[in-house]
Length: 111
Image (tube, rainbow, N blue to C red):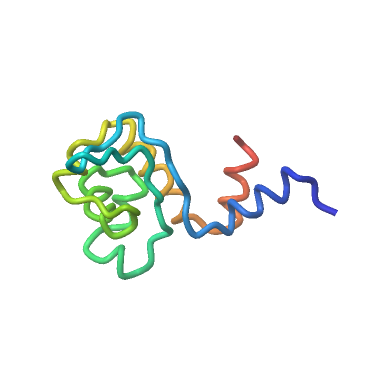
């Protein structure tokens, strides 16, 4: 029988999306976006970027795929409003999504 922590970790390992809280909200007209849902990228979302660049946290690569994997979908102008810490959060989520389930499990155990 799994403990509550183990069950929660298993859900995170299998998650297809993760929500991040932005340090600084993005303004779209009168609307303020305070959270982004980052979906696990599929092959189509990854086209045109090198996975190695994503794993190294390359900002250009992150900004290229972000509109393809975020909800709400952000434009280039809106992405340019993001704080460096918010881009780092997105990069961290993407890096975890690109790992195998066993590696994701190890990363969660380290937290």
